[in-house]
Image 1: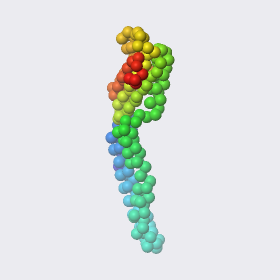
Image 2: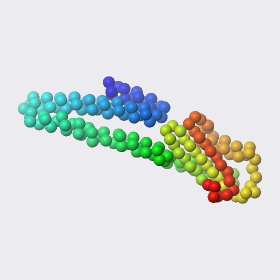
Image 3: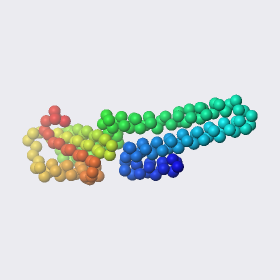
Length: 177
């Protein structure tokens, strides 16, 4: 039963990008593997008894779960590493590089002398902050032009959507970035 529920929960978890459903799916898989290993250990022990090697049967029951535990250890370790990156607010490198590339292109097109981007991903939410430095305090742009730049960045990131927080700032003083 566990092996039947695992792919369903896993697929739903990926579709919703839910860490909790992914973890629940893994628990179904691990539970199924544990049950299967116990059945296997009883079967192997019975087989050993049947062929006259009963003295080894006592070692089968602890050996199979030990091997299974060693094989399953990477599952919780990967989950802990992923959760640690979220707690420390470390953005995925591909998302960070994508945001920086978009900011670099926008800075070059609109005449900004520098930019800085900060990206954080927590669960399904993405927090993106980009700050542009103008060449001088005398640079004049209207609020409409700044909003158009923000919209250009939002469009390059795939448009505005739930769970996506975009902040774009403009300054002439590099100390603010």
